[in-house]
Length: 79
Image 1 (cartoon, rainbow, N blue to C red):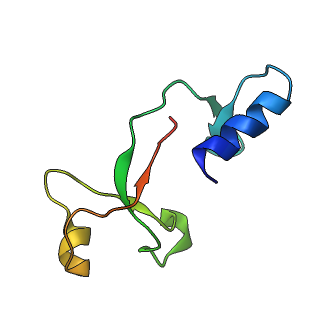
Image 2 (image 1 turned 180 degrees about the horizontal axis):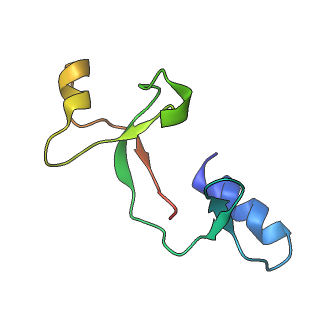
């Protein structure tokens, strides 16, 4: 989902709290929206990791594995 699609969908509905998944059925309220960051898309094969992985600015083993520099794709992280 892209940021503008999320914003449109949120604006169509009621003014409710927004949550993210927690542990064992619990949920957390969204408290932060981080600035856009470089992200490696579709790099994790094991489902429990999630398919994508943020680029680590200090040392990125994923860049080394993929033989690339900072990825061009970026994402906004909600926490």
